[in-house]
Length: 158
Image 1 (cartoon, helix red, strand yellow):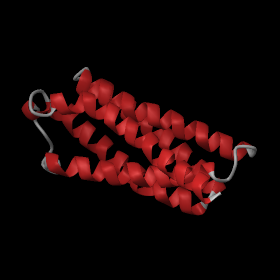
Image 2 (cartoon, rainbow, N blue to C red):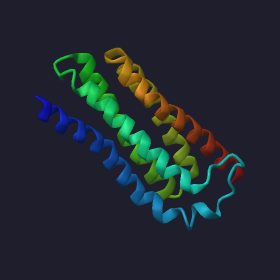
Image 3 (tube, one colour):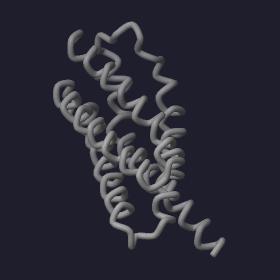
């Protein structure tokens, strides 16, 4: 059982990390070119802050996913939590594609709003299954809230 749990934990961390890797494929090429030329709000963090924050968030997301998944998929609340988690993860990658890949600030704004609402539903669903898993998503929704505010600033300034 310990080996199964360890494999499940690793897989649970790899799932959001893979989403982050896919998002980075759209993000990294645009940072020194398109993004560098944008007018940014004064509260924009330095570029070097984003990667470490996202790495921490993906690990926290993975641990939360592991906790939920470990409850077994027979329970409808667990299945709903897993579905919502997958949906918000797709939106997470979609934001990178739209904002950085397509270089669309308005499109990125639309996706980040959808992501925020889906993340709110996901966090609530995780709390229903496990308080610990729910709390592990709170830094993520806080960061996405900040990202949405940054996106608004970029929309206004550009």
